[in-house]
Image (cartoon, rainbow, N blue to C red):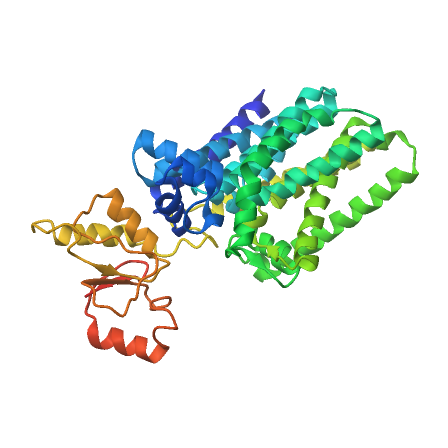
Length: 493
């Protein structure tokens, strides 16, 4: 009972943290773009992807943001309610999955490993489709594993339905759906089990909701962020390690190298076990836990294979950071399953079981300590939040002109296009009628009443408009800085 209570306390801690961040932190660039150019529009335009930057329209997320804002009004928290729903789904799926695997004494430790990744927690406090994708993926994996335990075809229906919702939330999760689809086809062939019809509803939902927008994005060659072209290991694996470490240089930076070696060792161990399971007929390879391990391993490896094919063969690029976020919980779950299966396989060796349990507990403590060190209400790591002070800038201008009677849209403010959605969001949220709404791209060489610039002027004015010397001369000669914010950004006129 005490371990059950501890598990719920850990879940409450993780969820409370993301709620606090969702309430406190200013809007990010992508959230502002999602609301201004998608969720503020019509349902028809959202469904048909008729708007600016179609890859930014994470369909289910955009729809839920529209519903949330209509119910609770425009605010950062209202935009992040769908992401918090995704976090609740993720925590539920993880908890239920671990209940299938672990006894109570290791439940809390395993939970720490899966829920206290700081980058994943950051994702759950941002109004983007990645959070819902992780939530539905977690539930989908749970139902698939429960199917393997109880052999009820209805769980296949629910599992693939959840994975289809994950894909509708964010197209990058199609890798997980496709990997699970290949796995179930292989499972049916090997086990002579007919459950494919239970997948059909989710497949029809995906075709109906995702085929047209994917073709549209591809046809118009829209830019898709978070893709690299240097290789799967460098662009995907190393960046996932980096975001997991969350800018913490443990052991002088050597900890990242240790994680790489650890991942390689786990993969090699899994490969050896896979080959042994094909050639050996021993009972350890036929116990229920091994079938769960094999299922997660196949889904994880297929996801990696799809990424490699897209990057190396199709030359599409390798997903980085949040675009491959699903690999982190899949790998962690695979690792926990591997340890659990190992403990069950060595029935006669209490020392091995004790050592494995201690290893899980040690990983849990490392995860928890890392979470405490990285927890903050200050920034978003590798998310492209841009200036934190955009909210303060609008508040300052409101205070500056509070006693004046100004005509609608009579005051103009200029900034780089990366900051434009942030300012526009707060102009609309705070109903500042006398400030002009900025178009996403505007010739910044025109005259404006105010300028909102970053501390090092980086990003202000496109290179095609001004070179570095012209930029410096323009700022030094024509602009008067009258307000500097804590993050280095400033207002000038």
